[in-house]
Length: 254
View 1 (cartoon, rainbow, N blue to C red):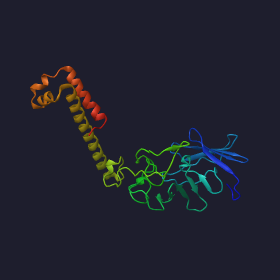
View 2 (spheres, one colour; view 1 turned 60 degrees about the vertical axis):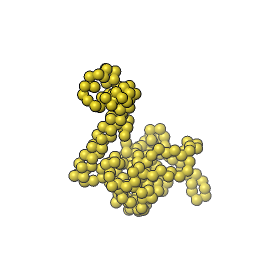
View 3 (tube, helix red, strand yellow; view 1 turned 60 degrees about the horizontal axis):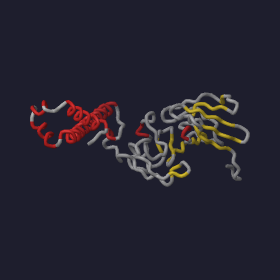
View 4 (cartoon, rainbow, N blue to C red; view 1 turned 30 degrees about the vertical axis):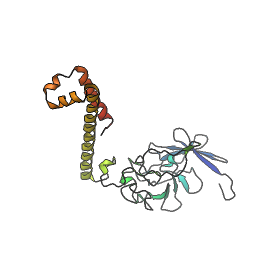
């Protein structure tokens, strides 16, 4: 809208994540890459406008598309309609709850959600290639299921879900390793050990459950008492035990 309340343009997301901007006398089609950054635009005749755009991992670029009014355009993460203000030499991206500076790779305000990233100002634990923080509150995917009511295809009310796990004191539990080279090695080793432990506990619990169901508690105790009991288990019993172990490991029963 302009200062008199007249609609001057409208931008919507089309299937395939292309942005479509409709103006009074023209149209702009904005095409993203797989990261969601707008790299090319075309007019209503399909003619490409300007050059192909490139970005570094933190969103710095040498040019901007013209797909919104004045000096606010959808560029880096433009597919997700995160506009960039580039009137000055210090561009600012409106990233949900907080402004983000691509030149520093940091937000300008404290994270409103505890544990949303590795510290209160950094962007996605310094890993912008593998992670996103589109709302300025929490790394994408670290929140639980959104149970808010739906109205007209949109969630109603404030999103009050906390970030999973809170702090980053044990990052191998959070699914990422925000360390240097040596820390990454140790972190990944811890994650692998935790994964093996979960599978082993799931196998054990699943096997016990299957054994109780098929053999009964008394025979299961006899099985644990000595090797001779192993020979007494029929083939179907082994299927139940191994199947229970496999299902327990798959579902991470703990």
